Length: 110
Image (tube, rainbow, N blue to C red; front, top):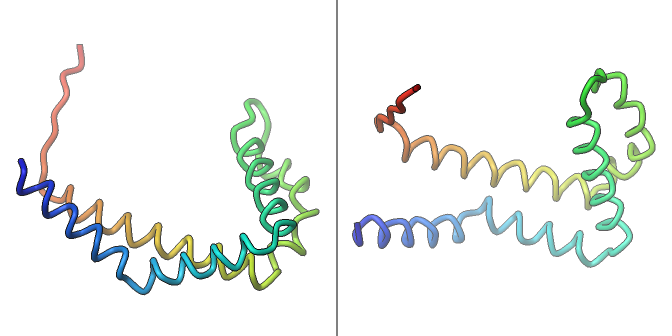
């Protein structure tokens, strides 16, 4: 088990050295330097999350509430950050998929 942990630490180092991660950190810092943009993005995310998790409503009909954030989402600092965030998430998903490939897990349905 120690070998698996050690190799996961090496993988962590490789991810931190990746262009995707460095771009994510750079764009995150640029976003954080503008408190208003950062705050508005957090507001957008919270509202978007709430809309997607409402029960008994069609989320597509409710998305009209997010139109007020259109200008924010077209801001280059925000757009660059969201794109970098998406890229690092894709990289991590590929890593997780690669790790899990070929592993078999069964559960007992009682």
